[in-house]
Image (cartoon, rainbow, N blue to C red; front, side):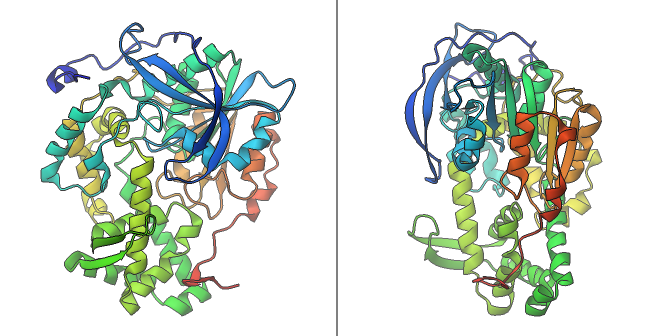
Length: 488
């Protein structure tokens, strides 16, 4: 497709009125076998490919293919609502999320269908990819960004201005109407909570129950505070290790170990050859500070990978063994590249976040002092200066006011959407409860008793009726004392 010249796109009207989506009368499901984008997981479901207008204001114009997957209810009289999942990123596949959590979803199919759409631009729905950008998305050479963006835009099959949250909620509502569901019960995680909240705002009567897991408040911008939140989570690891005799006795001061490793990799990157942890192929790698940042950043998302941080830092600082850092960084970057659609990611961030960055409100000294530094903030500024700004409802950034029954979930140690963000959305939600999961990270749906709480909430959307006693039994994963595991 011929993309509009960027100058013309930038002069386009960026706000558009909410409209009633056209019905999805042409959706036809057939049996399918699904595998995750990284080759993980298998799920037998019913699938459909559905065409939607690229530009919602021009229903007879160019179309995009959207992918739907459904698990039919086992009930003879299924509920009038369907349960759906919305993944984060932005750029992650919701169908992949469905595959990942398939063992948990059987609890929902006893009463209702589970119906998931890959948001336009992600997964199997007219995916927008940017190969050069996806290679190492947090560490671009600033001088190369304009050329990377120009190359990506030239290769995209569709105009990216139509791949934003405001357009995605119209797709979601059209799906609901076309398939005849009275309402949707929604689980959103991370950026998916922005989609869920905007759907609640745009179509206030279409949501029966909503679970927001790792909340992004509508007024917050993604990218500007990631380094600060992640540094806070890393500092908590240092403190927790120092306070636990087993960790402190075995590893000593892991903050000092981190500072030593960080300094060494900044000054003298290490040339390595190792078997790629995913493909097994012998791989040449220059291990430097960017790879250390990637490993730490994504390790902090989950309690299990957080538990490895002290032992891996100790291996590098005291034994000069950098293979664990290199191997984990390669694995995490590989999984990110295969699972994320960076064209769609940029379409969202460069419309809904970067335009609202305010340099005068940023403490750049504090940002620079984090282990991530200010590179991500600067990179997104540079990237989005080149990327066309898309369509956004004028209400998008306003605080949400809603009476829809809502379960708000936060991980105590979440490095990207901290509990304070969950707390921030509560004043506008008149029928909600906020649960902070002790010792947990980003996304809590699979943790301890939380799957049962979500199931109970979807069956009876009454936040105040939930028995939360089991939450107290959640705790951090114990630190590994060596590469074989934690102390028994």
